[in-house]
Image (cartoon, rainbow over all chains, first blue to last red; front, side, top):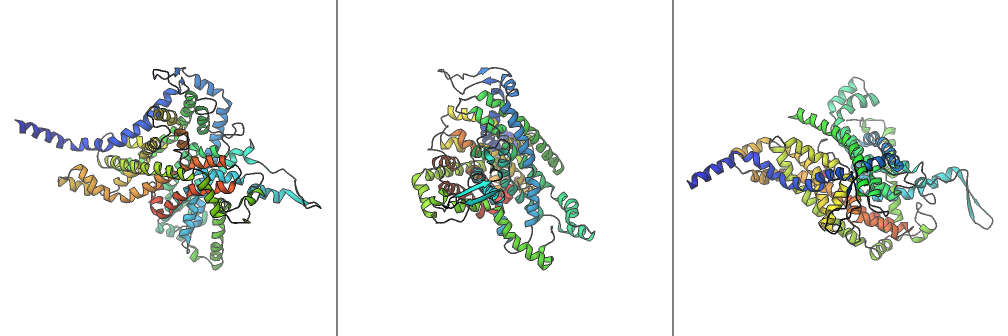
Length: 326
Length: 282
């Protein structure tokens, strides 16, 4: 009897081996991912309906109180929120420049002259270094006293006069702009800095893509008299579609995630004019004025919803590819 | 090949191209050159406003020595390694297992779970921030090294699983099929057949995750408060406050922060690029 039972058990196990195995392989990753990614998303969505300073009372109970849609009502009339939305849109549009610029640089570099491999890898550099460092460097570039921008400006608009005791005075037809302190230009200044590593990323993607463009199609196109832009548009770009898809996806995500540069270069200033949702959320949730976890979560929820639109589209595209592949 | 190879163009074009290349590179890397030059300057240059011109004196070693001697830079660098390396080990191992499950077995949840990992990898950090911070405080992981690498590992598992699953899916399935027919246990198939085959993917993920996590700044701020466990990115910001206007020292510290990912990139460039293109652009 004993052996019979164990026999049926093992045959059940072996019959269902292929049904059980995947979950055993998946459990560790899923467990981690649920705790740190999936659950927090839902907790944040829930928390956006509460007011909470992050504290617990003596019994270890959270002091959060339910306030319904109050946080969202406050967001609606919060000018800083709308400035952040506006800046997010600006980031999104201008960041997209990274894709065509990256393509152009990739085309420029797609040659086989000696040493080109070194050139290519040096062009990738900006992508590898931390955005904190990039933000610091560009902060100096924009410095109105000694930055490169100021130097170029002085060259065009300023005159240096040396009086008889040898003191230098600089008189400018137009004052040197202080880009990062200007409500009008600061965001553009940060986006420009952000484009530098992002373009590098797109260059990497397109160089790999160009490497795999079918040579026979190019030759066929040449025989048909296509060249230059026509060749690029009708023959090359269609083949670069996978690269373009990834370039657009990572650029959109990168634009909406932008945080480091703003935190380093302006901290959202002047007067909150360079805030974007990601930075504004951090500012309201953890700031010297006390923690507002509920309100912060409401900001995060708005950002999350915007990104979900794009993420859903990307997933849908991937799903189409999967079905075609299967 | 597109564009038309320059060798086939006229000599003038070729010469023009080859002389323009270094110039273009110079312009492109100008920010880095500037910071590198500045990290070699003496204080005199900084005080006279010569931040971008040619240095009047070279103090490379002195500057780096000052950064190491007067600040917590060494501590920050060690912290960065202690956060980054476990993250790489955990997330890549978990992703090997999960990617194998999602690529090889046909079950109804395979695609939804795969998309869960993909989507989770793209969400904004802010939607996770408050709960993760709260969880870390509750479990005593706030302001610790482990608290940082556990979170990073979990988050990066999404990206790694995406990559691994696609990589394993592209392997010849007959290998696995024939092993099954031979009666080889599933975990043996994984260990003896799949793992050796996915080595390039492991390498690609290792460099990428290393770079991503090394350069993280947001979570360093959210999950730490003291100097003891800060990584170098947050450290550079702190140094920027400490060395107000001492740009030569801040530059030196910034370059220190940039060196490990740059070295990693140079050593493993091929893998790095394969990883960035998600394996989709071969």
